Length: 141
Image: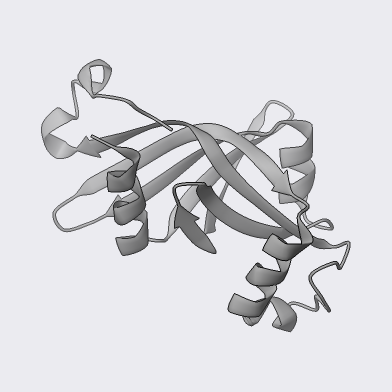
């Protein structure tokens, strides 16, 4: 298995749950990546949101993407990297017009946070390997 298989799965099934830690309390929310490629899975948030505070305090996350028919899941564990590169942030702003509807004015808006999961470990889950989690091959990226 390769990370490209993960990319393909995410593109076909973009909705995910992202888990963070808030002190000792797990927090989960639904997100859709801005884009996914060999350089990582990109998301946005706002500096004013709890998600940003949680990621700043502890950048470790887990993502879960799921397809229902036939049932298959992709679990990704990694750490987020905040993206400060204005060219990359501008690309996000240009390609995703909904960002402006959130009240963000421009790519260098201090409230606009772009982050990615670029390195970590992934594995696919299927019903057939439900009781064999330790045997599921891991994909490092």
